Image 1 (tube, protein in one colour):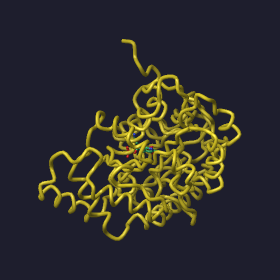
Image 2: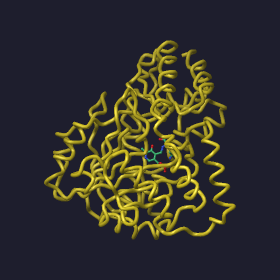
Image 3: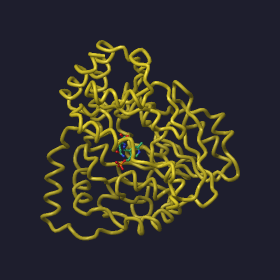
Image 4: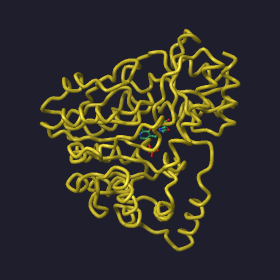
Length: 379
Ligand code: PMP
Ligand code: GLN
């Protein structure tokens, strides 16, 4: 058949998780926690189901959850979104991103992505009929290159997708970088899709710079976040989008036909849970400790060169001193022969660019990280 996505195969996360399971490897590839969420959250789900919250919720999400999201964004970032018209609960960040893209991107529109980037962005743009404009992050540091972004802007640019904290590089944009983006876009009508799923995983005292903090960006942005990341429940597939009312109206036109609603009991449970003391405030320290444990082990036991992990739950390493294999071959070899799964950064580039860097996920129990380190020490 004539395929709409000729370049697309099975995602690297599926491939590496399947191989890790087959080889009984420690899976530090696909990003998900191997520990439980707060038991209170599970009780809230059971309670919601028992209370009969098992039928379709309102299309944009239950009001209590949208209220909780709006209150949280306002408290964290100082921008107040209307729960009624500016927040929609989504089936994870994945559905949020494709819905935002389908809502604004028309055939022939250009959309800027900053490479390396999360693997769903490019196929999503292509499904919308848009043209993908790839702008590299600065090689080595993975910082945004504003001269190149400026050079990529044309009258046909419809949107730019940004992601901080960044998957896969684990960089976190600074306030100055956000201001530069705000200035750069000021004379344009370009929308921003801001993937902020790792908003609560920022280390070493830095803070997450949500577009919500910058009025010139907030006015043109869809903010995407994910309860899966924040509450250790990636399999629930619940997230949300915040955007100014006119943008959200367009978003909801698509949302009501690509998913219509998101599962009801989880929404009630999350609304209930968000009324509690705020567990996400502990996430930076929680994940920084895991980063430090894992990074110290890698530094002591292996010849990998560590890249700085400023945020997210990923640690990237340069493999040059350890292997001559390409990143992709190295990850297959590491899973099969050493018993640790990782993700090659080349999977986040359209042309498979290989810079000898692979990504490990440290959202794991300490014992899992130590088991992986023990195996990696053989390298
Ligand atoms: N964006 C980024 C940058 C991600 O890392 C992920 C999850 N791996 C997603 C979006 C998708 O999030 P969700 O699981 O909530 O769909
Ligand atoms: N976002 C996760 C990662 O980057 C995985 C999500 C997925 O499996 N699609 O590892």
